[in-house]
Amino acid sequence: MKRKMTGILLAGAMAAVMLAGCGAKQEEAKETELITEVGTDAAADETVELEEEADTPASGDTFTVGFDQDFPPMGFVGEDGEFTGFDLELAAEVAKRLGKEIVYQPIAWDSKDMELESGTIDCIWNGFTMNGREDSYTWSEPYMKNNQVFVVKADAGISTTADLAGKVVDVQIDSSAEAALNDNQELAGTFGQLVTVADYNTAFMDLQSGSVDAIAMDDVVASYQIEQRQADFVVLEETLAAEEYGIGFKKGNEALRDQVQGALEEMAADGTLAEISEKWFGKDITTIGK
Image (tube, rainbow, N blue to C red; front, side, top):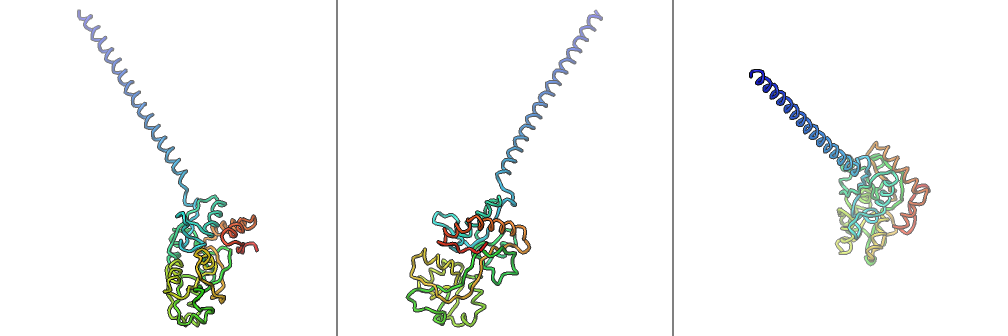
């Protein structure tokens, strides 16, 4: 009887061991399955992250251009609400050739240096006059010539700069025209008042309403504005200053300047520069390669 009881006990113990082994294996299988699922989910998440990173250009893959959005035809907001303009179209073609994504960044013109120094923009490209600023930026080669001129109403009885004596003149703040007038106090001192405005759209509205008698501004921009507005304005023959347009980069950024300059020279050689100029001005007024 004792032997029989011992056998029963041994059989029970063996069964318990086998059940414990099965339970451990099942638990181990569950843990392995869980680890596999976690690993698969993590791999999937990593794949999604990589795909999202691929869709988002790194900072080195963008070309951010700072411009005054109220400065047609160089850079402005078109009728469709999109940024457009001669300089912006040039910049977009340059970015394409460099394998970068173009980013248009409108700026307040009197804050342009702060935007450039902080790295918000890569360059200033918007009918940007080089003359008098040669040592403040790293410049591209000039790509266009321009004059600072005066715009008046055709019937205002103003035909020379001498006729501006006692008159009210608008000029954009921190513009080349303002700098030229500051340097020519012999002329500016004869004005009744010199008024600074934020942009030339405001200046043209002032001229139209009669609140000012003249605008000092870029000839390229003046000619475009007069044509687009179909207004009875004229440009005085006497010029205030002759100048050149260039692209201004942060001082010392020769690497990006050289890339952009190379792309512009390619565009001049294959006729793209002339084609874009003819689209906006009816003729090629660019100077690169000439």
